[in-house]
Length: 561
Figure 1 (cartoon, helix red, strand yellow):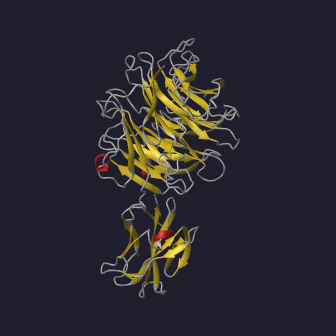
Figure 2 (tube, rainbow, N blue to C red):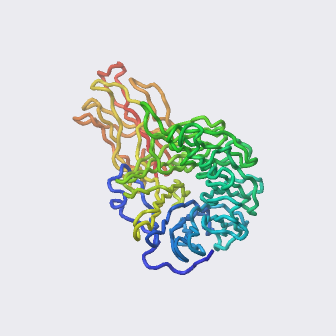
Figure 3 (cartoon, rainbow, N blue to C red):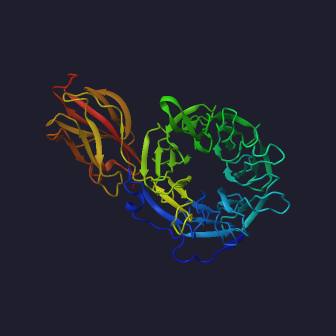
């Protein structure tokens, strides 16, 4: 591979902050595009694969690795790979494929520090490169993050499509470094061609640890997608989730996902889709969502029939593979394991492509509630086909998101684009239930403005109250469920206490309004990275419960700096 430190041509791959009105159109929420990276030329397929690189440059901020397998620095589709600073988006280094049709950068992954120099390293596949001594194409290179020099290379061990997917896996062999899983979904031609294989290598040395193969039929494509599953069996070693999206054992094109022990290479459990689902086209490690000490895995798409027809993604328990939660989405890609709302629980984000506008949806790992939904990020059909958590690149306490659109016409058709997206500011969300009052089904909370503390523009509203009644808002740092008056109090006293706003009066439409000034009590108790619960308490002398006091439903808000 060629290591290129030459300056980029004017206007190419320059990180840019664009007007949100241009990028987001009319968004359903106000997530911020922190940075935009564009491919250099038409056909580059920049962003075909991408990953969090780890801290490559030693500034304690996670960096970004992006593949552009269609780039032509040394012939048609020789390929190119870029490593960008997470802190400011600057190009740290780039590597080029050595010859035509190598597709260098087809798959990329951050490896952690496998060389022991204190800097994170990266792995890059070139599915068309024939390594010396190999019969079939496919080579995986592991590079020093510090300077881009090659640490070692692995050639195809007789399998077609070796390197179609590469992913760093938690330490499987107990040597203190992360390891490397390589998918070859076309498998070995003489042995059920297209059945697929996965190879697990030592990240430190590149030595083969395990060859993993399902009892698959031809063309099942085992290994087409794979991911670091985390530690699903609580043995202290990293495990792997692998899909065979065309496995027909449960129906034509149903798909099967298997979770494998990284320590032994044996299967822990399997989960199957239904006819036509290509289940497992999307897999990701989700982290420990349910708090049992075992990591969960995210799988999709799930094709449902009958009254619940449509697609979902599914969180599977690491303990036994049973379904923990299903989230309704028609996914192009999904990521899990990052913390979008700073509650310490891994969350889930799903992208969807279509020919009108892409959208991005996120759910809380804690309870499955919606965190945000953003529409119109890119109008192109390959929007969000690559999607990972970036880590906290802007140091605000919230994990950012990387989205790749390899067909975006940024510098010509198919040049590609990568967005770095902040989840902040998160929209407020309704929680708990209201109780009937003297004028209807009950008062309901809403808000205007944002949960961005620097803007200080959040306004609380309680509507559908009796006109002219007095009331106030509770600000609670925990969620509770306590009967109170005619209703149930859900804003509770947590680590930062329970606070009350000044008393106000509902207007003629039955709306109580209070700007939440975070520079003055009680709003000044709110800190960045904390979640608060808001609820209106009001007098209702003619209320159906007879207590003369009632409460609205609740509103949850997680605050950004």
